[in-house]
Image 1 (tube, rainbow, N blue to C red):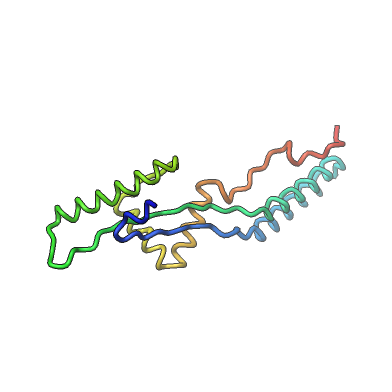
Image 2: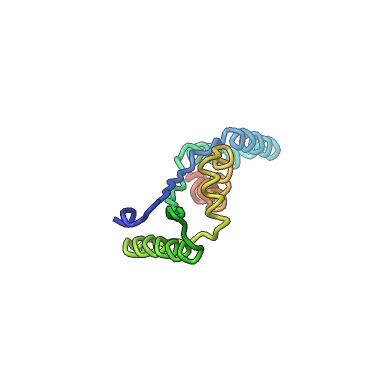
Length: 158
């Protein structure tokens, strides 16, 4: 309903792909194996095997960071229009979007002009968009596995 009111809606739906943790897992397993060899401790070796299994399972989990972004703009009217009138139309368009999102009870953030331009550039430039999506996903800890010792404990170790 909200989009019906907009003259020229430009909607982007962003979803990060699953990150490839292969290199991280190889490095983690080498590091863990070296530590186990250094201590020669059976309970520690069991814990290490459990930890490696946990990391492999975590790496397989899908992690997506999905967000919808609506970029609004106003095209100049045929026959010309002064800057003030264009700004008024742009504010009206923004009002429609904010009212629609608020009525859905969704949290939102209004992008500044530079962020809006970046969003549009990322839409047209796939390589830049992918790298920035991963950066944003990492910042939101969507692609950051969290390790909690309690999750990887070997139950029979006293």
